[in-house]
Length: 220
Image (cartoon, helix red, strand yellow):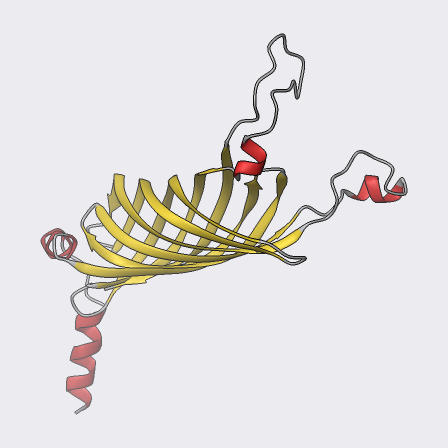
């Protein structure tokens, strides 16, 4: 019995071979991730911060990953500390709080892949694009849902384990940008000059949000 246990331990810790890792990479397998998300979030006149978490899950084939995601963000545009110190006399918008939930589907492609032959490791640098739906609710009343487009880039680094090195876990980071149409009440405002200009125009009707992700990735 002891000999058998020692043999299994030796197999699980044996060096990875390039052919074995290539076979694993070229097989269909699942991958999941969870982590924190924080950054700027825009909804028409609302220009604040969003922070929360997100969950991902999908199918990977070597450099390509197709996955779905869910995110939950707390939104706030609380006045800056210097404005509060001045008794609220600075030109700050009123504080607005709410939550934003998003579901989406994304395609990711690894433009750079690093693998270890003797050490079972893999690193990826990737680009992605996707579509989603935002569900926003404000604490003091009002709700909005709208579609969006997302683009992002990032990287991940994972160690492989298991008898055939067919499981992996590691860390990842990413920057995701979403584009969504602003509410009609904002986009239909009269032409104006928000800064120095010689031709008044209507406000830009595309909201842009920039969110940084950091978390754990895992799969088989």
